[in-house]
Length: 393
Image 1 (spheres, rainbow, N blue to C red):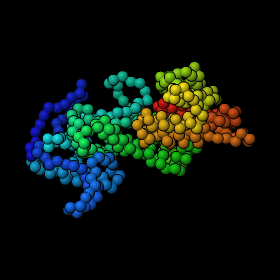
Image 2: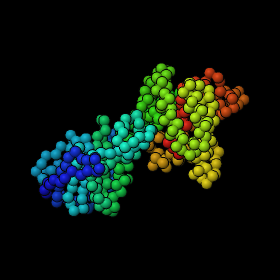
Image 3: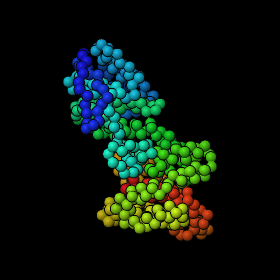
Image 4: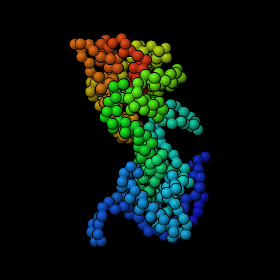
């Protein structure tokens, strides 16, 4: 078994920061045992898997991988410390050679951003609405290769591998898997919050949701206050101040880029202008009565001009988000947002006693919302609710 070097790969002006360790004449790896077995018995083998260090199996698999890598390194006469690496990428070639990248390969992320930007623009976390993939753009990975990746995010690790038994590696799918692991670890507090029924109920009651516009910025403070049971008024005032005319104009631009929003552009412009003037009654009256119309326009565009009733529209919004994002567990949280729409934005009210709040489209539409409920906080929540649909459809 020998170790060799090669030139650093580049993609445009992007390049790896070093070289991989290269090994030759290694024993072919098939996968990881999924169950114990004695000699001569049949055994199930994992050839494709993804998990985080929160799962007990992770530690057994990674300990086994570390043993294999240490053996390869010892045979080559070098020392490798997998524990000290933030990102380890092992590529097994069909000619029994291998490349081991330890914090040397350039890493890219495929993200959904909440504002328009040119190439080369600095991106802050607050600009990110979702993470869809993680890859290594300057590393050559072939269709017949096997790939294993171990990486750290904060105090957790993710591990994914594809032993490619059919020799038809779907690299895009593998990168999506890595992106999912990264997203689940980096934003675990969000997944935990929405899985916590009592906490999500408190968020719903207050009208908040991890909206795409605030999910990687202001929402964490809202969540922390809600989790602690604190009064949200102070944090809401602070959040509202962040929505100046420039930010609202950016939101409007995002809306008007969508055909099903564009047909209502004058109404939407009036709503944004009203928010900038801190006129919550106008904002709420316009936005909440137009949400259903926007959804119906999107539904017609996707169903040969056929509209749908509210229940069908809410289902369409959820399905559209899952289809667009590639799954239900993305940071767009389509299932949770479906509940938010049903229980908050389109919450039922009693038409006999005429009780209801300005959060409910039904109460607003029937003139049954109390005057005091038309607050600037509710106006912002209405704007963010409509804005969420811009990411969904």
